[in-house]
Image (cartoon, rainbow, N blue to C red):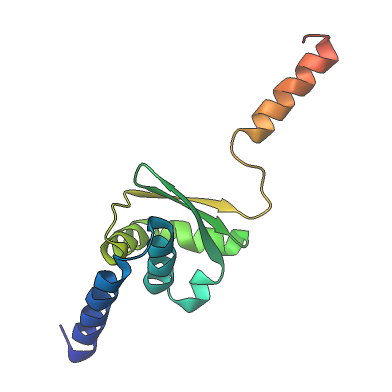
Length: 117
């Protein structure tokens, strides 16, 4: 490990210790910025955390693809910095219908068109 990498590790460890006083949501948001860097962090927003799964809303399809390709690295780094288990990250593009919403809506439309209630 070179000197610069050692300094990064020291700073991340120090940040992790100071984050322990914050709420889980604040810890994860701060860890998101540290884990991905400013440019990527500005294009993704931590919007939820449940059962060790982090939910991130992403600005557009290009950034979504980039984040998905780095999912494992990001989860490990966020977990380390936040001091919380992050075993998975679910990404969703901003403005895209929520998962299941389109299926529920289309099912309701079928029921209406067939006269079902």
